[in-house]
Image (cartoon, rainbow, N blue to C red; front, top):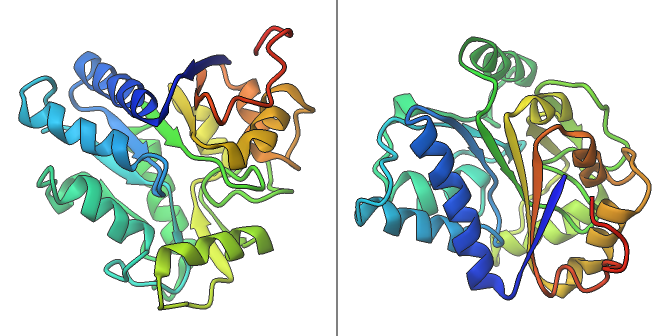
Length: 248
């Protein structure tokens, strides 16, 4: 696993947008999975700017959703789908036929898992997956203790995820109990996995994930077993790494 430390969040956003653009330049019809959340927002804004400036052509890209809060409709403010619509799908005018996203309101969530897995079997694996990392080290909604080889799964949310997740909903505070997410197995099959982390509040978790034990108690550490993974960090997120040791 490569590790790159950028001096600040703006430089981090530019570098991550550049990785995504390079992937699409190499394969215009790339299948991408992009995480929601505050960390990648600026990278997506930069990617939209690049599209509008003619620096990259995203018109053939297929987007697969990483995860969603079970019980929330796609247009619910703060949902993962709504975030991606705001930051990527809307600004890029991505048509519905190029978006594969979990319906977290479905009566049969296991059927939703099978639908997304069937798509990946037919059109995948992912060319690039961009992942954030939770305070508890989760990837998507693969929580501490997650299984190691699963495709799409319905998960019981860790209390830390529930607590931190409420920040996305403002005065609306939905009951968050479960998530539906690409599993670790699907993530590990991606041609390129990019972990993007910004800010000092996650520095201890970053150090554990990159230089501690590898295991499902800290799901982000599992990326060190991926054959082509890159950790992209800003200086604050990297501040507890022991830089006297070789980074993975």
